[in-house]
Length: 83
Image (tube, rainbow, N blue to C red; front, side, top):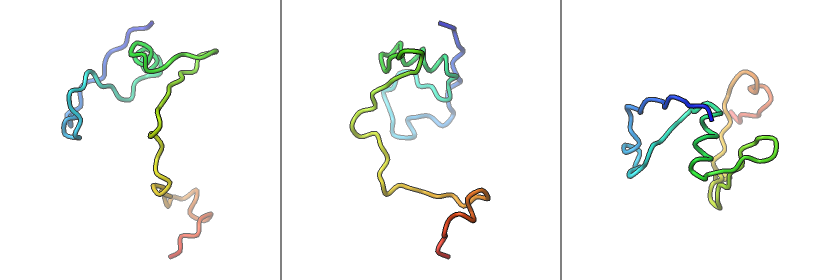
């Protein structure tokens, strides 16, 4: 696999988000690096023709009540805003 340069550590820190005792954490990895990390950690498998397949578990979806619609130009006239 192709080597990649790790992204620098965040100045915000995951510990400030309540996460601790973590090993290396990455964000916004390029696709080849994402595949490499997921496969190396046994977090997913590569399926036929190349898609990365992962099992996310039972409680990974968003709550049905957590839906938001953004008022922006392309949808503004298609939504009743009840104003």
